[in-house]
Each structure stands twice: as structure tokens, then as C-alpha cells.
Image (cartoon, rainbow, N blue to C red; front, side, top):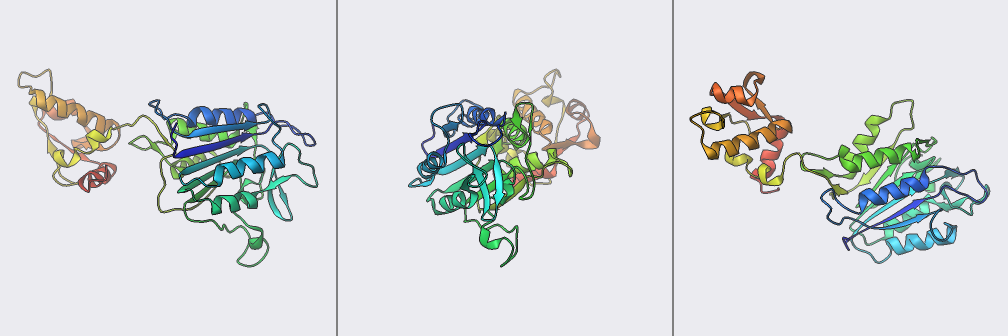
Length: 325
């Protein structure tokens, strides 16, 4: 596993004093399955799974110790995922532990935030799937006074994705939390860009589009100048092809002309042009390339027409031109 990336995945279905849940252990296990490896099988996060079905009970003391092990003295990239009960209190939001009671439900979201903020980690991503998860990052000093309620206070390099607003409950469906089910789809490739990179921002964009105005509304809070990929999926276009865009198009808005030598069934075919033609097909399928009058590439080649980059294609042309790919 990548020794520079670690993830703590916590799922609690069974509680000693509070009604049980049904999908939280499955949430944590599903997150481990998708996060341990990139799509090509290479190592991603070194994951630690903590659930109510495996190992010691997830008590206040045990979870606090796991938090310290996660955040203290580690300068890489950290991910924390929690699926279970959450509750609001006068002191702020609380992640409910297995030994929680109505009067003393567990560990505060503010304590989690404080540990994440003090960590020397390069980046921290908190994925909180519980009721009132939006309270994460809303310190009590901001609630009901000061600069106003519902405002986040987070350190640079920290991103929070919460399952619901600070006033909303979160739900389960078909054996998973609604929020985590969407996270799993995003990480499996639903939120990947052309290069196959899944970031915290693209995960949120994927999740929030899937939930309507009457559903629980996810929250995104981030203070970061760089969003490292959370996972790498199969790219629509390999970087090796993206880097060649400036060699095909001298300028971002240039036209590239085709002729019969690009089509392998034509007598005038040229092997080098067929190779280029196949790369143009990949670019077109990824919406980086458009053709004259919307014709297919075969017709363009026979009619000696042109192709050009879409706005998205021009964006990647610029990255390639600047050596950023």
C-alpha cells in the first residue's frame, strides 16, 4: 500500500443504548474495497477498518485512540470516513459511539476537527455519513453568535464532505447509507475526469447532482490550494495522447485536416496517419474533438474535411502546451 496515504474507515450498526442501523458496516467495508487500490490494481490508501462487527467495541475511548493514531505524527494524505449515528447537542455535533447514551452520545465533531487541524498531514479529507453531518466544521463558537451560525472554520489542506446539512437527517437505502452509496459510485469512476482522476470536488459534484431539493443535501467545505486525486480510475484518454495535442493542433483553435490516407480501407492509406486517426477517435469519444458539420470521422476523411478541439479539448491542449500533463 501507499505509505504516504492512510484511511480510517468506521462503520457502526449496533449500539448498546440506541436504535441500531443496518448499512454502516457495509459502508465502511465498501469504502475499503474501493480505496485500497486504484482501478489498475496499484496501491492507493493503506486502510484501517473499524466497525461494530469486527474487533473491539467502537467506544469513545477506542475511537479517540484511533483518531490519534490517524492524525498524529503523519505528514502524508489522510482520509477519514464515518458511517453511523450523529446527533446535535448544545455543544455542537456529535459522532455517536457504541457506548453512547442520550445524555452522553459520543465524541464531538469539533474534537475530530481539532485533531485534523493540528495534524501535520499534507491534506485531510473527512467523509461524514450521519445525521446532522453538516455540523462538522461548524465550531460551537460560531453557532448562534459571533460571525453567525453555519459558517465553517477549517485549516488549509482540509476538505469535508458531509452527508446532510447541519439541520438534516441522513438515510439508508438498499443496505448502504444514501451518501456512501453515492461515494462508492463516484470513486468507482462516476466522478472521474478525462484522465481518470477522482478528486474531492468531483465527488461532491457527482453526489449533489444525484440528490434533489427534497432529499438530504450534502455539504462541501474546503480550504485547499490543491486537491490530490482520491482515486485513479481508467482514463478516457491516456496522458500519452493528451500530451500530443499541440503536435496535432498548432494552436488551441486550429483546424486539423484529414484525407483518405487516414482511413485504413482506402488505397491511399498511410500507416502513420491511421495511427493518428485512431487517436482522434479516442479524443472524439471523450468529447475533446468535434468535426466539420458534425460528420463522423470516416466521412470527414473521405471528404477531406477538418476536425477541431472542443472547449474541453482546448483546456487539455493548454495543459499539454505548458507541460502540466
